[in-house]
Length: 599
Image (cartoon, rainbow, N blue to C red; front, side):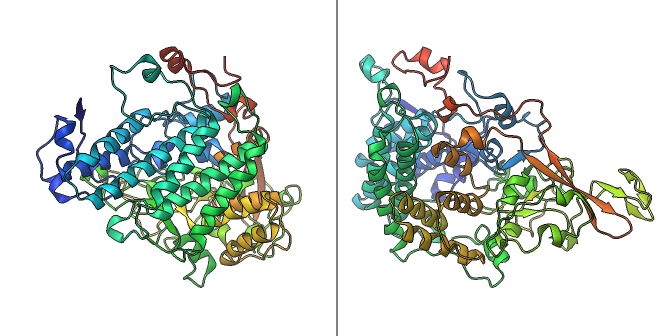
């Protein structure tokens, strides 16, 4: 067996979950044979941990900076590529997300979105091939095989949603293999979705029903079914709204849509009727309750998560940087508010009575307003997802005002008037709307040292129960069962504290998903599979400015159109529903056909 490089450093050992302590007591490893690895239970755990470290979620799913793992990460950059958010500090990347949004994709690809995960797939295939001959007990082998198959199915889902059909490799390739094996052609998009659904269904029966606190971050039976729920829903949408091209390498025949919706429904209903999960609903205050979904570990809504602790990777832990980057000021680097939500996303949240939350942009820019007049009486999820002018944070009131209106009608932006500063203490150069979701108000955001800043302990929720209800609602609606769809949606709205729907439409289902799952890495993929991205992602987005009136304490409101400040309009072209395979890959493997539209 070929030599395997096992990267057992502190960085990898704790990235997802605590490994066997025996692993940490071993001498540093360099090159050791695969036979040796799979004879040692501790090294088997280390090998599997490295696979988790390489998986396409959170930072790995959309980073653009070469990171593996996400300890330094704040939120997936996929939010910034979608119509949800604005990457404020473009001098840091200079934000591949921003470049792609305005420059479009070309045949060279986009490092932010790309995930051609065959090195990880090979690691998993090696694990699947080797673990049966290990000294582990038969029951443990069975469970670990199921775990590895789940991870491999997840990897293929990450690729099929990007590229359509990709080569399906399920064994360990060898240099002595024939060229047809070493240089495989792309399978059809449908066959990749079928593989994902089949594998996830099959391994679900060998995964544990319940994951205890010590095993948090490992998949359960219901995590596998959640993957089926999501993947089959995607496949149904692509069949319904997409177009078959390249003899099925991309696209799924429209006649298959209902079959995939039924597969999604079956998986969703298995989770719903299991009684293992429920919408988190322990706090009387609806805003607090929604915030706590993302702060209370292993709560009733968590099906599968990326586990974190409060220790920076450089200190041997598995923290991440959501608080440090996205918090209001003060912050250790004098920044904060890295990701800021577009006004359009904020307006997608309805009033508490179910009426539209869109501002009257003409009227709101005339006269003076209190914050309650601007943002009052909203869906409680609004106050748990964002922060803006007048929000309370750590015992203080956040101040975003970008200028001071004097009694003589002039606006000053520096200095002060009668002791009132001309501008507030928060960053008002972006959209004016910070992202509160996932933020822990008790976290110390002032530690700017390398070991002090990536110490957020909140777990990243990959599958949660509300998504399953939303998947169920959408699949039911597209299958003609509007009653079931409305029941699912109104469960979510009831938990949120907002008026129920009295009629259900596709637009209502899409908006409920947009609001409930805002900033969780779903929106970009949703508008792609619905084939609405050409319209949804090819517009200019807005921000808001608050000008404080010195006399009344109220605010003059300014709507900032084209808040990104670019000359180009964002571009999402029809070919962008699939990413390019890229020149480099098609040159390396002549059997890989490029996706349509890339030259």
